[in-house]
Image 1 (spheres, one colour):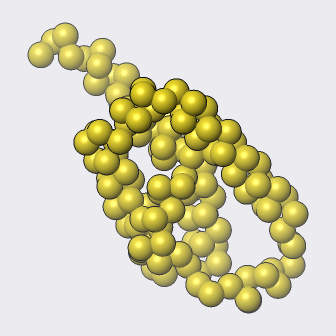
Image 2 (cartoon, helix red, strand yellow):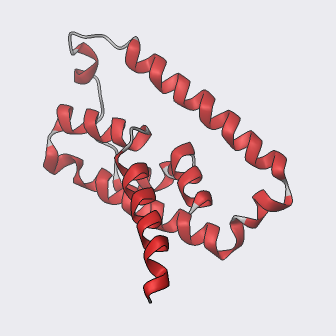
Length: 131
């Protein structure tokens, strides 16, 4: 049991660093909370949790071996993820400041949409594969 402390320390630091650092989920939740409020954003929050658990389970059940079998697939995931993050950054940087866009929005992301988003979220993939 005493030999496990370095493992749990590393795991805890990894979880804190990846959960607290900016990523698509954090940005989308911040925007949703600002536009629609905390209560209306709850399904989005729970969808992220559910989708991340589902993605982690799929990778642990064998989906992660694809990246060991075909290293080019991991490189492709990094490339697509980086392009997506640049796209999100550009959208944030070029967003109108006056709030006119918010009036045309359909509402916060639903639970199922947030679950599905985890499967295209590059940070979620990176976290699951690394863990």
